[in-house]
Length: 402
Ligand SMILES: *Cc1c(COP(=O)(O)O)cnc(C)c1O
Image (cartoon, rainbow, N blue to C red; front, side, top):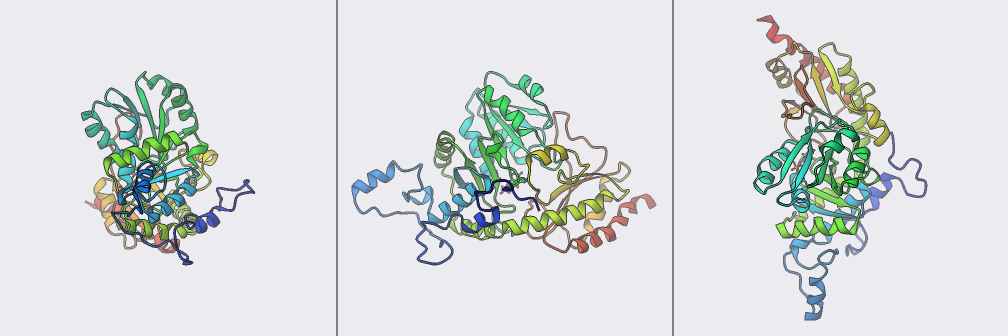
């Protein structure tokens, strides 16, 4: 397994850091884990303390429930460790982690650049909410090079948003090259790093704010929704934190505690799930019904070269493009006959999922002439998952008989 710290001999390994992060200074009284701190009111011993606390809204001070408890701050420290940033802010969902920094950096009259392959609800937020607030969005081909990106910038472009690989179609973006263009133009680079988790270190590649749907692999058990925004500079931290507080964003401490629990085992889950996903993806690539497997970690898949350059591993979510002859109905029938793969949105849990998808694209990217299926490989035995697919594949031909 690739390890994100290979070559950085001074720092302990990723799995080691995941075991130890966020466990200091949280009044644990000797217990291993930080407890759940529930609370709205924080009592001040005197008025001088109250005055000092009011000024501490950008620190991990306990001021009022909405500004976070030791449970929140412990998780923030763990996520900052995962992403290699300095400060993190937890919010109620991955989508809130997408929308909050967009609101933080964009004002009426500004322009935003979004990849055509961006997570669907992020696209809806731009088209509906940002349009209403007077912010214009241009969708760009996620595989655009630096020169073509340069041409898309306007004097009022304030945000370059990246998501790599893209949702459903898994295009790998040249984030360092695009970020360099954005920075010469004075724009901020926001990245949805949910797929890359710790395998892509955003701040080593020019990202200013890194977004995670913790709902996925950090939680890891399909039972909690949470999001995070991680930054690496004081200025970005204050911008993101300030907007979060202004919006009254809050995440339940019980959920943060569950995410902390999930994070402790994430390194081993990810290693296993990547290995299993590669095994299943290789099997699929060998089937003649399959035109293409969209898994950047698989040699021969689109984006593999950039993935190899910028990532140290992969999560277990990927796409399959069927040969053009197979209809949507055929793919739906095949998916419904799977026993071990559930049909469902979201991903990153311990269980496998299959979801036939159709995508909205307006910048001319991501057009395939076959049906798309998105697979999430869980912690089941990969041999059992392949057997399940093998049993279901003949269903693809059901329509041909008619
Ligand atoms: C799931 C997802 C989100 C949103 O996370 P929720 O916690 O479900 O709101 C954001 N970005 C990507 C890429 C996702 O897959």
